Length: 106
View (tube, rainbow, N blue to C red):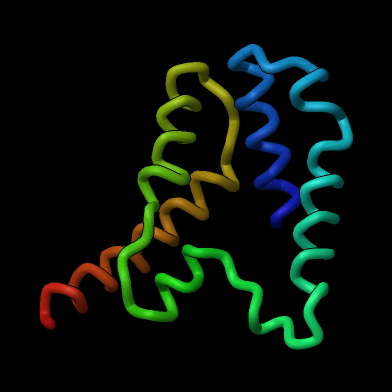
């Protein structure tokens, strides 16, 4: 799933005019390998967590619109097929709505 999401991001980047010098063919594998190395660099991998995951764990709203909403806006403008990004956005919007309800109740 991560690979497919990154590949869709690359499609959007290419559509926006970023060429192979900025988005080389290896960019998806490079990013996955870098994150896996970072996550396993510590003996205790619980020290590694994305900021969005930390927000969710702490019942805080996260930057859904900044992270994926903007990507979807670009997609609509340039008519790219980014089905996986859309699905993840929709699922995270449900999570976000729940977090906002919790936050309102505090």
